[in-house]
Image (cartoon, rainbow, N blue to C red; front, top):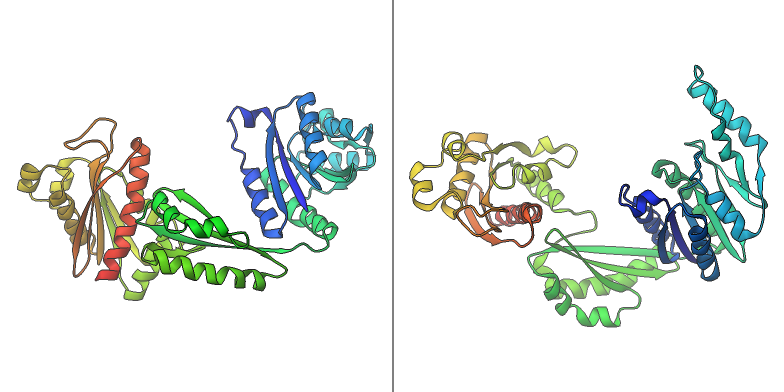
Length: 413
């Protein structure tokens, strides 16, 4: 089954609201085995909405529209769909009663706004898609062989309707659908271009499973996706390709699927009964934030010291004055002293320290020069990194690199 999605709202085109609905629906369509061929966004304009709907109807088996069915004057999705279908809008008295009852229950001390009754209209020949979490009901209508669904734009309402009503209906129409399984291999330490070169032939010939690459904050993800009648069959198709990928670049793969670097570090620390802490300057606490992003972080994370000023590096972390005097703040010697000091002050087994010149103005070293040190019970390692991009990119990529250097240091201890 071929499916398209259309998001309605001028606020999306202006960038005032992120179109997270498109991503969330896309994930669900892929998991259900549907062919998702196009995503579109259109403003609150009847002519442009009608054109977008007609185009989707002409080439898809189903169209999922989000937004534009609320109570305000710019909520015109109902009219646009009715216009394409060539049917009038009808007034649903049953839903009028639902609207009034809901309002009286939620706000009994305030008069009912008559504008809410816009939500009681829907195209003739359409069927209601119940919205259990909000006041705006959705609807579905068959237009020239294409099932058109109109759903609210509020994510919490829309996703519940997609999961509970839209996808089950489409699966039934498609005869059950097929299983789509994706396996994501996570890597760090090899550029996206180099990963692509190493796996080029797998990408070229990969039809089922397919091979795709995604770069994110310095990490490279290799996604293997297979389509089959069952999930077991899809996984069987993926297995030999995954084995080949690992044989070629296995030294940079650190996890798969939900194995984020934070989870991997936590697992390794728990195996050893170790605690970790951070000492950060240029990253301002980003590494500590990443390490505490998982629930239950206190099991392995003890604390963080953000020592931005030099006197804090001296007074709290115990960096020798002569180290900074001789080598500067942005130096491997200072970073290592920060890590050793944090390990002692925080009372942890592993400490990671970051110093550097994140920009926009250079600090002792060219902008993008970032230094990470990791101290464990047996080793102290230091790396000087040269990060591209603006200040926030430099800081984000350095935090990622610091976590991966922590993992390597733990494994080497």
